[in-house]
Image (cartoon, rainbow over all chains, first blue to last red; front, side, top):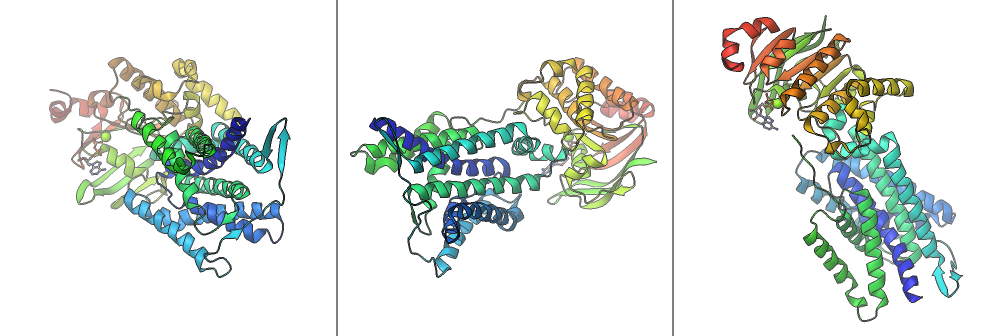
Length: 291
Length: 236
Ligand SMILES: Nc1ncnc2c1ncn2[C@@H]1O[C@H](COP(=O)(O)OP(=O)(O)O)[C@@H](O)[C@H]1O
Ligand SMILES: [Mg+2]
């Protein structure tokens, strides 16, 4: 029974990682850059929820999604777009700068500062009992959201014209332009989607870990990035798989007292092992060239 | 009337002057060939026309509209499509999805279906392979797909960059037959080729490019008979 509970918790935590990893992987695949500040969007989303909670929890979450979407689009427009075509290193350093900027903005706001805020979005969430298995509603909500997000994103990419245009841009930007695809618009859209997903992940994460502070997004961000790499960076199913895998490993490790202190180390050892066996990640592929 | 007019075009890569003042035009209904050896600057001219690389100087007009500074993605709606060098089909998409991308700017479902059928009847192999991932097609099939994709939007002007590159002679003939047919049905063609003999044989007019400059122009037949051209490009 314990094992099933651990597995369900792992799936749910993995779902949160997957939603963050999707943002990394989509931006990497389409805009060809590592958005180092992606994790901090989660944190900002948390503060947006905190602000919105004074009105109503549902509105708070919707406000956070909208706020993060606009923030993501703004960051791309102001910080990344002017650097398009310059060296990847310049872009990476800018992204790191944006990450610190976002943290510093929170630190600079007197109401927030460096304090830890206890964020209760839904009071007394409780648990669901199925036979002997007791599963928290936070876990169930996260799982349900993850499923909805993954299914709708997959359908969007596969079956809408805009979704396929995203694949086209990720594969060959110039060829996509020749099809009449506005690459700037597709990149903006990618940042918008990725940032909304980060806000949603932030919400799920707060249900589980309600202590919000300015570095709230750092560790989940790095782990989700690892998840994206494990799955194959640039691959959408890969990010989903990598996230779920990492979540399950994490919960399994945490459930064994002797191993629990080494969880993070084990996660990154798995990352290294997978990259040794398959450098492109589990579902990542090399570009084919054909004459 | 000139459909496409390129005037005094100059393109630099850093300090290297790749295109040093090139002017040419393509009239409605023509097939115009731009021939030249590897590295002469043919692809550079194509990319400068479609806005993928910046122009240092000069102007480009399409049907009397100045398109010198236009964004690449706005050219297809104006009726100019291009098959880039190396085909550049979307390898991860299916054949059908590639053709859909060719109709990205279109909105009319019936027109899409009609165009799709047109492409499928021209190249039945594409219909057979419609749900196959495009990256798994052979080189010749990929070229057919690339041409079909470019035609899905129903362009007035089609730019082709080395459509015969790397293809077996059989496919080369198929592709050139298609170019002639497309032209007969009303599409103007600017054809860039290293395969001068083939290109000149179907072109109304041609320009010869040598290290970033046009050195000769004439009708296809004239150039085929030209002594210098024979020696330099047609193997004696
Ligand atoms: N991205 C680039 N950077 C620097 N030089 C380039 C680049 N692309 C092409 N060139 C140079 O410009 C010249 C023309 O190249 P290109 O237009 O590709 O010729 P062609 O298509 O006729 O073979 C060549 O000397 C080539 O080396
Ligand atoms: Mg070339």
